[in-house]
Image 1 (tube, helix red, strand yellow):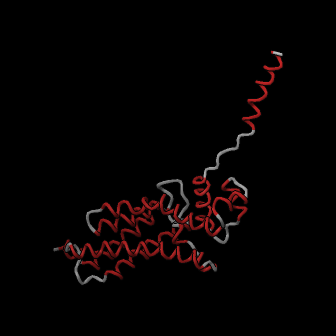
Image 2: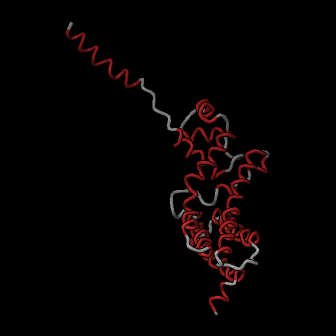
Image 3: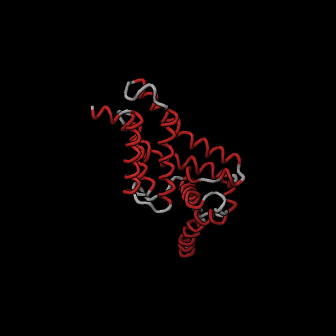
Length: 222
């Protein structure tokens, strides 16, 4: 009887271990989906691509995220939460508008070329074409995300005017659009293989344009 009990005790423990399901890490799966969408875009990323990258079956994907569209919306949020600081931290901590814009462009040169972390090249939001692929609601999410850059630049420029850093006659919208356009172009070039040093050179030239437009060059000479 004792030997039978010992065999029973030995057999039961492995059986329970084998039957224990592995916990689903939703955030880790979302990170993999974000990376895939970032590299391939929405339309070119299939459900099969996603399940392979996320390590789950399609029923689990739909149970956890609802749909491919809902997953993409969450991926945009995940992208923002985990990558925004690479580009914007220096902008927000800068003492002047010029320093803020210089930080934005130089930090973009580093982040967009994957020099600050193991991330794909370019900006997921800038490079997204989901709105032109027939997904109106997702396209609106992307446009809203892109507009944040312009809004932040305009707010910083208006602050610079109120503090006397740049002339009150400055065309805030045009100057903010100029900086945004430079940064967006850097994202496209980074995806095509431009190096960090090449994009930093672009940033330096853009700041010469800033100085001309804001009168900083004349003030330095004076």
